[in-house]
Image 1 (cartoon, rainbow, N blue to C red):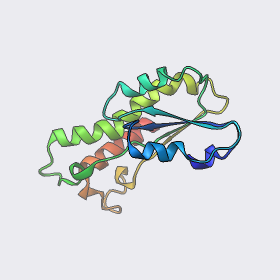
Image 2 (cartoon, rainbow, N blue to C red):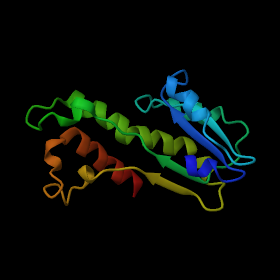
Image 3 (cartoon, rainbow, N blue to C red):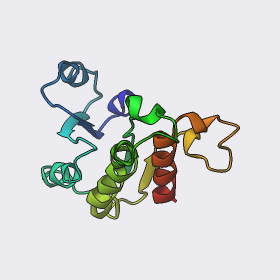
Amino acid sequence: METFLLRPKHIIIASVRDTAADYVKELEALPKADGSRLQLVKIESSNSADPAAAIKDLTDVDHIDVVVANAGGAGEKGMIPLDVVSSEAVTDVFTVNALGPLALYQAVKPLLEKSQAPKWVSVSSAAGSIGRLEVHKAHIVPAYGISKAGLNWITT
């Protein structure tokens, strides 16, 4: 984000979970090149309605060139062993890591389609690799791995 803000005439749209959080002031204070600005929107990746609401509020944006979907999280739920992890824990992690980016993609797709060179980037993890599960020792994070494998599928 900082790199793009230092380029002239760039609008950076960044999402935060809480627009009143302390770190928001730090983001807003980042240096910006001439004509560049940062616009913060509220997106909580566990809420499938947030991306569409955030995009609806972008009244002065006619296209988006690059989207970086960096939803991620698992906390302790991601580390519960497969033989005892609950379906609720897997669902919670999957909702944030796979369904959150899916809702974001659906919300931004019309604006991406207006770009001359649209780019979608999903931030995944080696834990989402089914073919290299053992190499990456991803079996210790089943809910997280399942969610990132889902994200990988959505991205392809």
